[in-house]
Length: 108
Image 1 (cartoon, rainbow, N blue to C red):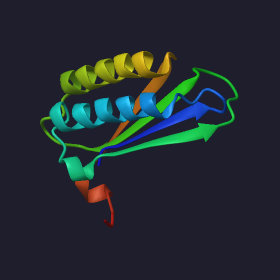
Image 2: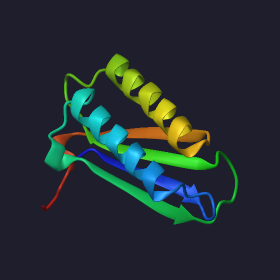
Image 3: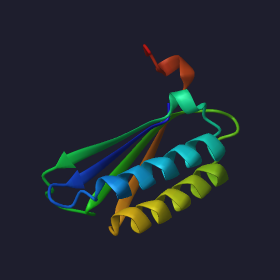
């Protein structure tokens, strides 16, 4: 963790180059701002049929830690919002979900 998933409407998926740039930005934000280990970061892009709302939905799932305070998460979401706008040219709805370690059951 963290897992960053972008839901992007069919036909609006940016080029591979822009996705690589956004992935790099996400990795940097997760490792620097959220202090995650590189091997725990996942970035995924899902092509969706858009129904209503913002053209991009970004969902971030992360493990709760004492150092991931509201100001840290504000810094993270602001920087993520900027990266999405720069790389996708779209406005995103960003939602972050923190989970206590005792509530996470994982493999690999």
